[in-house]
Image 1 (spheres, rainbow, N blue to C red):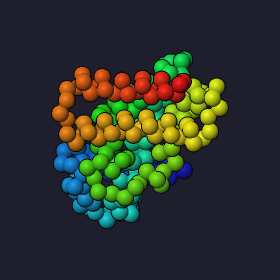
Image 2: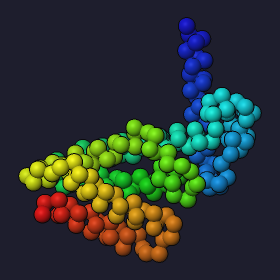
Image 3: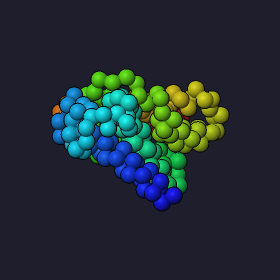
Image 4: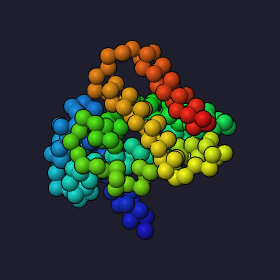
Length: 199
């Protein structure tokens, strides 16, 4: 039984090494450079071994997308738990979202198809719904006196997400303003949308 556990552990370690090597290649050379051959070279295995763990490059991208959403959800939950007031929770979660995008830039790119040609991977993952669920719950709490419908909450979430994702995308593709101005725009947008929830 111990040897079976050891084999499983080694398989999981190899799987993690493949994902780590993939991410390292992307950090050093960009998404277009990622290939099964390069991954195999990086972990000193043959390409057929990689295919035993991931059927193709898209399967690796999907797993990296899942990893990104798990980290993002963890960061947003931690930010939410630091505050009691729903307004502060929303602000903290969106700031955590922003910070994640730049701390884990390559994961954010694959999660949302920035600077990378890929199909809509996040649509295949239940983990992709967690950020929405976290934020929607707080939006609903703030809007409770107005008895919001599911559509009302959805509109407010996508208003937040459109502005924040748009700012992130602009800054990833072409940074023309200072970090101070960008953060001021971000905080102004978040507080403005929060005010609209209580209008």
